[in-house]
Length: 321
Ligand code: TXA
Ligand code: MG
Image (cartoon, rainbow, N blue to C red; front, side):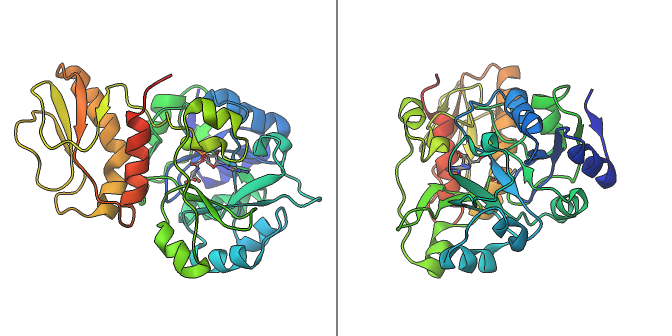
């Protein structure tokens, strides 16, 4: 049974080593005390997540994060500018780091973040422990932006969900690797890379990898291409819609589709980001009910959160397997 809990209940469960889903400004996270090995292992089991894919650790403030990893000047400047907020920084673990090794998939680095959602911050304060939290979905499925989405995928597999309503940003944090001389964008997300470059200068942007390449590349395990998959096949950059397709619209919808999810009528990428994952879920369910065979997605510009939207769409459209 997965129960609905209040803040104090969620904090007590986390301290006791249980799995608790909680809202962040990006997506719902599946939290556990990052120092307790069995609790961390339970995250991987509940999600069906491969053990080579490390988790992000969440803290109530930068000082708490710096107790576990070594920040450099770039990390401090980015934290100053974007925390609390949707940016995860990959940094070297301290020798004294108390985070369980499995949380970092055995790497000598750790991704850390201070989330901006008030309930997430209050939970981290109340629990008083670092919280490892991937997105609260089964591995490979679309990330949850409501408590109901969490229950669809993980109901019965986790102790509790803290409901904070729909997530404001709607897609995951930007993941930036600062362990090399030149910063590397491991995942575009809630903080646009242009905004990061305005603070620390140029960031390299490698291309997404196939699952096989990613499993060989321990540096960027989360860059595997097939991810965020809806059940229906997804076709990108659509300029027209076939009779048997549903439409993921951005701006004025293409004519002819019966099943339409509008990301943003006015063409606003920030609004579109917040509506993306709910839209993929809805199109899957509604499309199946209406006998639709695929989803056609209209083009979304790359600027701002558009880069993160296009990254998720590319992964959702990648060959499965
Ligand atoms: O917005 C978010 O980041 C959400 C909320 C809950 O905070 N969390 C999230 O976690 O999206 P997850 O596990 O779904 O994605 C974490 C990403 C993965 O791509 C993972 O490979 C990468 O971060 N990552 C974590 N630790 C890493 C490390 N030490 N080195 C390289 N990549 C790392
Ligand atoms: Mg995820």
